[in-house]
Amino acid sequence: MMLVAMLFAVVGVSVSRSIEGAEIRNASREVVAGIRHTRGQAIIQRQQQVFHVDADAKTWTAAEREPVEIPEGLDITINTARSELTGENAGGIRFYPDGASTGGSVELLAGERTWEVEVSWLTGEVSIKRESDDA
Image (cartoon, rainbow, N blue to C red; front, side, top):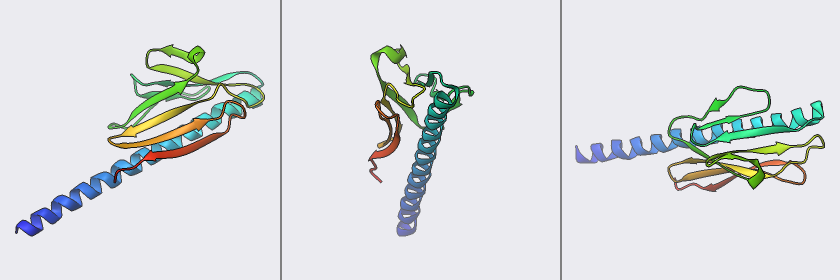
């Protein structure tokens, strides 16, 4: 009986980590899509657009879209140019009509897992990087 109980405990933790991993992976992909949308809108409309993150509200907002809440259990932070900070835990990444940006990164955290979405300041290129995964 003890062996069966321990097996269920291990399986429960494993399933929980898998769900947590899927949530952070999907949230990261959504952030990437939002950032790419913002860059695309800057190019198409030929005017500056800002991808905004509010860590306190746990939301991000792409150009001309409604704010998106990140899933419960995840945290979000932004690392951006000082001029793009709009609060203590909020700021944006600005894109210009040529596709360039102010650069920066958005981090999504779930427990000990961290995924970072990086934006190049020169090209505005968006990439995703898994920093740590203690699964």
